[in-house]
Length: 216
Image (cartoon, rainbow, N blue to C red):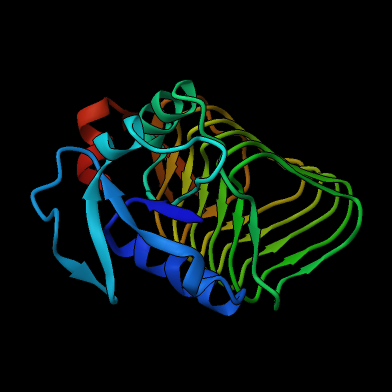
């Protein structure tokens, strides 16, 4: 049986993916920290507080990560310390070669194409209709938004957010904790912990945790 961690928009998108995988009936509901909606229904499934995990059988229940922000790292790591594991999900319409490595909790949505010699770290997401070229490495807790096109030999660090419609040139390195604005074209390396956007994308300023909460 499964719980979806996260009861926002991305959590609902993840539920749709589970429906397409034929796992709708295995979903027990949605979980969120300090829930103000406990006991209500969303998409026909109950919302509950993550505190319920302290009482459940760790072997009988698994989780699916459904929080869109890279800030999901803290709740996920806390839950893993309780002894739970997370499902790795790949939509049936996604095209993926056998030379793609996916870490625990990775979610690959509909319409994606992943070519060859690709590594995607734990709890990263590939949202709708993106393409990832050869020899790409994506770190942990990184979110790839819909319609992103990543060329070959690109490296994307941990806890990054790549906005909708971004294009990344071959050989570019994007460091850890980077937010790339929607519609950007990344042609040069991007240093860590910055907001960057534009055509071509340029760093605008450094980021704080409060920025991440507002940007996503």
